[in-house]
Length: 153
Image 1 (tube, one colour):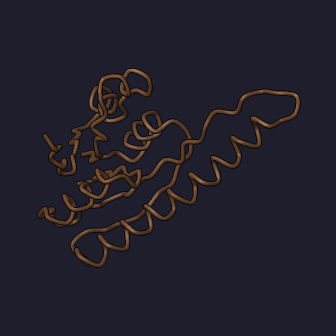
Image 2 (tube, helix red, strand yellow; image 1 turned 45 degrees about the horizontal axis):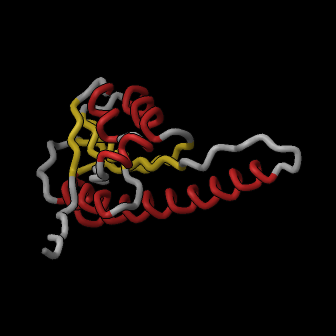
């Protein structure tokens, strides 16, 4: 079994890692921990200020992705030991597209990813990565949510 674990460092990503750790995986399971560095788009301008902002944003996102992947792979390897094979991958680009491409390229049987639980307006503006992955993936997809804090009445 091949399981693609897509993380972005959010609380929901932490819940995805917990889900991985609390499952019993078949012998020979391979887990790929994936994070996608997604920078603000480069805006063409004569002074190249937009490009500088894009490069700075991409560098920041790469660092976050590296930390997320390294932390998750280390923890999964430590807690599950030789029961599974784990490796990490960092890609760049649009998260939905890259998750779907990697799942297809690698031959994933299952994609685990988190849901930010954004409201309707945020989903309208930014889209929902988890929703798009569920709709377009070639394999099974499970969306994991972190426990939500109760709001004060």
